[in-house]
Length: 208
Image (tube, rainbow, N blue to C red; front, side, top):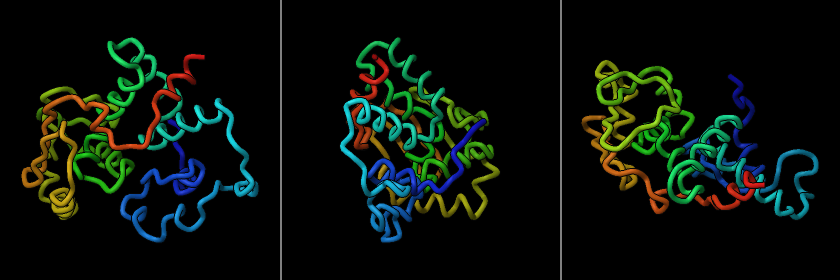
């Protein structure tokens, strides 16, 4: 499967904001946005004002990059969100939040979604007692997401559990860092998604 492999800091610069793709580094003065707050490339500093279409496209690209989703995957999420009851934009964000790699990140087990995705791919997590190594797996209400018993004893996960204990989990997750597990106690609402996203622009883009 195709996957972006270049420097992820370029993505933040392209979107003109921190996407927190490199975890703790994004909070230091080494962050690319703090050092070079303009788009990459030789014409980056001369970027012109965006059209309405340009704004919609950038919003879609920003959300794709935050969640680490490919173009085709993202379109499928949007089509599913359209078929669901409720507001399409909010449905889209809810589906993205319910991805297993995002849930692991929200639990605090990973400095970034890409690190959480790698941990899931390597088979370190279970859902309701069964190993799941698919990052796009959709968690549901009352699902129990836990670190696999064999992985709990490793120094890596002991340090991740300590880090998770110091982080604040969203209200829709009940996290127990000591047990290295979390339960979905409600589906994420728009208020739970603390990201600077204008989902209405994405709906407008795909509605053309």
